[in-house]
Amino acid sequence: MTSKILLLFKPFIPITFEIKKPEKKISFKAKIGWTLTALILYLMMLNVPLSGLPEETGQDPFFALRAILASQRGSLAELGIGPIVTAGMVFQLLVGSGIIKVNMNNPEERSLYTAGQKIMSVLMTVFEAIAYIAGGAYGDLGGLDNMILVTVQLVAAGIAIMMLDELVQKGWGLGSGISLFIASSVSFQIFFGLFDVGPGYQVGGSGNWFRGALLSFFQGIFRGNVLGTIDKPGREPDILGLLATILVFAVVIFAESMRIEVPVTHTQYRMPARYPLKLIYTSNIPVILVSALFANVYFISNLLDQQDHSGGFMALLSDFMGHWEPIEGDPNGQLQPVSGLASFTTAPFGLENVVARPLNAIVYLFLMILLSTVFSIVWVQTAGMDARSVAKQLLGANMQIPGFRRSEPVIAQYLEMYITPAAILSGIFIGTLAACADFLGAIGTGTGILLTTGIIRQYYEILAKERLADVSPALAGFLGID
Image 1 (cartoon, rainbow, N blue to C red):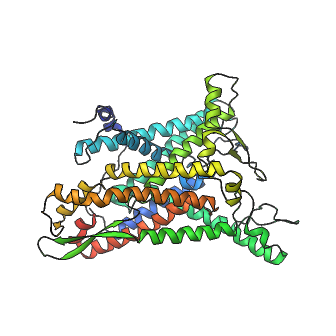
Image 2: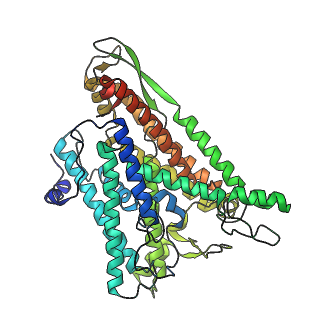
Image 3: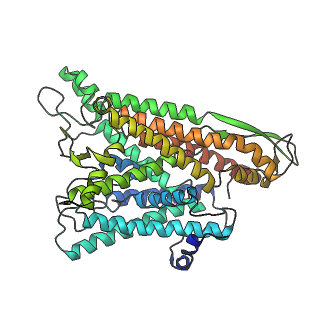
């Protein structure tokens, strides 16, 4: 029986924007073309400034998560993928808690679930845009007309981003638009973290120093102050951050190669094969959802802290969410949460901050592991990665497990012994790795590096499968390619 909550979205389905799946098989080259087109359009949005903003726009509440949200301050992509991921997170929690019951094998329920997520994404875009304006995130916009202008731009851009993501996911492109945008955003942040020619902190002595880790390191060699460039204060990119970045890349690549291979065979040709179940079974999705949750905590906390609360419930709520103060030594006067929930969902960036704030580090690590594990388990159920769905996929490709009856319940029961533990271990591993990389001061943030490495690996596998399916179309069903 279809959930009553899902039925609430049914009247809105005819008016929702939708990218239709391709009626004919899209060639590999065409998918590459559509993927690059979506990426180029998104990068253009990142570099097109919003019209109507004042010269001074105040502090950025999302500064620590810009790369993960694939967004840029003051641009059309100000909100980035935040509303889309937040809507997905809300639905994941509703399904995981049993408030919404959905059968993904039922086309009608799956359609309602997808439509509900899309409508929620639009609502979140509108809410965040209005909250940005009302909360004074841009400072004084100088009148109602200008406020409406900025709000309309943010909402329109948010819907456009949602359509670009759907374009890639519906089969026109390769992989996921969200993953594509995150990888490109983090890659740019790493590049600028290494080669930024802008002014950085004073690394002892006098004179101007480049902000980029590699550039300032070579400056240190010529100026006789190499040690000062290895471990800089605050969130400044340095050599220790570069080493942490390389370490995270290496660990994720190694972990991605670890898998359990379930023996299968083709029922007709009796060809033996292996069905791989990776250690990082749910990939980077749980960390994306956790990041979206933390981003909303930052956003609400920052907006509440900017308001003048004389007492009562709002003052208590503001104290609970946290207060913000300028980062010591930051030339831009950027703020960071120093108390409340927001401070515990912000990683102490760098070993120096971990030592100075050990309680925050411990709580942050615990929250990352716990929430990543919860989202990992829920994602398996809603994304068609559970044992029953995998069993159905194998049977649909005329595969079976040797020694077991060719029955969906039997195969599903066998796979359950591997899939549920893999989902739990996946959440624990990526949550721990993301937090520890932040503690080491990785350039691009630990979560960003983790996501980007996993995304690059995913695209490598997607490209390999697409090429194989082009050469041998009969394998497309087994590879999960439409």
